[in-house]
View: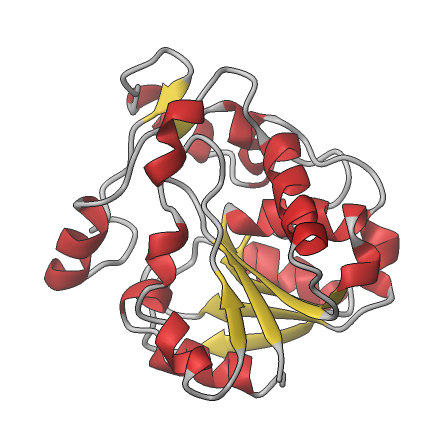
Length: 231
């Protein structure tokens, strides 16, 4: 049986996988859903210097402390930045990498650099602390009414530096040596260009129709089916 390590995106926490996790566990797999520093129940750790590097190290350390081997490392949205950095730091513990409508950066790229519209959007969404960003409208992210209510009720502000800090070196070599899948939401164009670039890099690319960016979280059946195909 496989071990899935699911890494959430912006303003989320390990809780965003509550609807997906049972679908993987019922098939007999182990599922880890860490919450990144500065978000959700770990929001008290939010600080100006909490960024991509901190989060990548956290996931690498989790793989080490849990003794995970051949992890299927999955990142949604900003979580794609994190799993890329973590794969470079803990290559010997990662079996496969899966980007779920997510950033798939190369060294030197930041989330702001990959999606330039994010920076002005974040500037308007000032959080309670000057270094934080408040959650964006979940409806604009593709949630239906029920899904928007579920997500909005638990999202927390997050450190802005997460999206400013560029990815460090080493990931390209690691990803070139492992199976990498890019799953994107064909009906929403947030990551269409990122998916096209992923295909040029030799990643296996899967387009999901009828599913939005946050629909992967709120209605995860189709997403779960794609993940289970990897085991």
